[in-house]
Image (tube, rainbow, N blue to C red; front, side):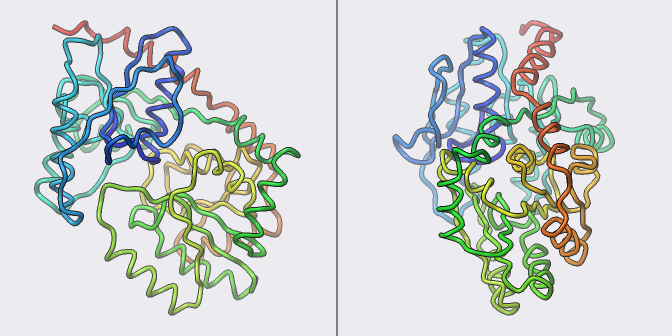
Length: 359
């Protein structure tokens, strides 16, 4: 189960895992909340995976709590737990819809809204088993809630991004470069929001421009359930003040994303909180130098395959270094290729088989 059909990390994970399970011969159905009638998923899905989409009741655009509760209700009405051997929720909303599920915790959130904080808490304490995509998140879950989780890393569609970086992808890469410009071109994927560290990335780019005047920042993605308009206004105002002028691409078609990633000179995730960093791992598969904020989870997952920087100054230095003397791309491609969705599916099956049968 997942909360949306639009491209976000948890939704990407849901579909890729479901397809890998189906390829191993498992019967899999994916439940998701469809934001608009007939919208469907952001990409085509393997026919062996059954899709069951639920439409949530309409709410006012600014009513985040209402959208969350309506999404929970829509999923709860769609799912009959008795009709499945196991229910696996990939996010807080899905876990609230079926409390006795298995839950993947991709990262831990912090909410000031009492309603959302209660949803977050229920989604952690009520599942019967837990999965985390990194040991760092599993440790936070252990320290904060006394919950032991299985650690199963994300898979990566490495071949897809490697192909975009090869000779056959040259025209698509060139088209992106002509559209965006920049020398170097710095790309981030995930949109403009507090968790992605967008403000500190803009600050970092202003520092990079002192050494590299033609640098250009492109920001892709950004589909989210939450209302980050006030934060985006702060980022826009600061970018204008610093004369950074990022190219905000918004959600990019799934078929075009690998070429965009392969077209950049430096890929950056300036996140202040992450569970794994799938977009950065995809960039490694595309042989791109990767710069990450200096978080324990990034040190755990990426090791020496990426450059780390703390705060705007540290990120700026890392971006300049990656643009001039990038790390050996073989380190990154090997790391990305080692994370397969088939192995992730196999580990999930081993976990499922250890769980007691539902009453």
